[in-house]
Every structure is written in C-alpha cells, then in structure tokens.
Image (cartoon, rainbow, N blue to C red; front, side, top):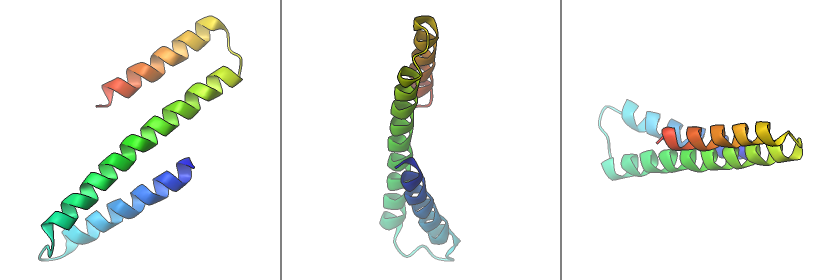
Length: 82
C-alpha cells in the first residue's frame, strides 16, 4: 500500500514537471490542482507510514520504555514536518 501511494505521488510530480517544462502553461488551475494532489498525497503517505511504524513497534513487543520513546519520536516527527 505504501509503495502504491509513492507511485501515485511520483505520477503527480511528473505531471507537475511536464506542466512547468512547457514553454507556456496551458492551464494554471490544472497545475495548481496537481500541486495540491501531490502535497496531499505526501501527507497521507506520511500518516500511513507513521501508522505502520507504530503498529510495528507494538508487534515487536518492545519494552514499555522503548515503546514510549518510539511513540514520542513518531508524534514529534509528525508534528514538526508541518
């Protein structure tokens, strides 16, 4: 699922690149739409990645102290990327 999300984002970024490489941008609204789609896709990817990472920490049955440290790192990272 995460790889599929990245593939979709790569496609959106490719569309952005192609739009900017044109000598004249035909549709500025479409370019902005692609930018928003790529940005939202990255946000959703980050959320899904953090969720999977948290689940992995729980599955590995880490110590409470290590689990707490890992969850704190997930939360800190998620909110400092904004």
